[in-house]
Length: 305
Image 1: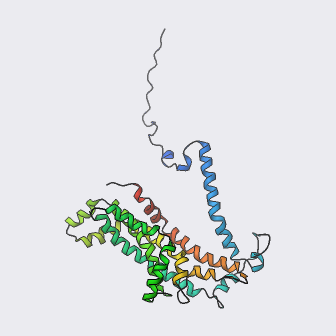
Image 2: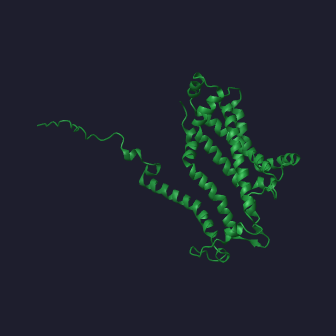
């Protein structure tokens, strides 16, 4: 005797969703086998410790007294003091001029790199010519050159122009490395934009410049922010160019840190305090524009209209 089983019918309203919200919201760390997920979390934790522990220790050391910072046994519990920070802005080692020089040199060089890089990148992305890929590679290859290879030629040029020990000289020196990177990065952002958007603006009566200013640039804000932050970080942290081209009237924060290393010893407390001034502004700038920064760094991963 055979029995037949009727096909199960789903009750309306009880169907399982095709795309579970839990699966849709899963991150890469939640995928894979339990062992792989655990390994990923361990690797991430080690990477965070490797990155954060030196920064946290530098921050703590900047609030320690000379006795605590040079103690044979490191201590986490101590009486904090502001003597290191007060010492940076009083006496012979006043940090204010170095801070102003860094802000001027890094800020203006990053702004110029973004402005000129956006114009050149737009032209490179929309120009049809033979050898365009070779030209693009040549532009970025100048960024790959070691600093030691360009220091001597630039020094001879800057000395002839009277740009040694001047803020404009530092700005131009930083541009030699920032500008090729800005052109190459912005050309990739402009190439990712659908051509129909600009064509629609031209059909509507806009000039080429108006289409560029009112349509193209607003759509590449993430690229502009990304380029600006990366160029700013390079110029802010630079030591090699500042060592060669700066002087008493234009020395930057990294140069101030090097002056604390003398033949009589190293003032570790003030050195850590200067490190805080060098690291924290760039970290805050990255956190302030993290949405644009992440979008800009990942925009080129998906292309097509």
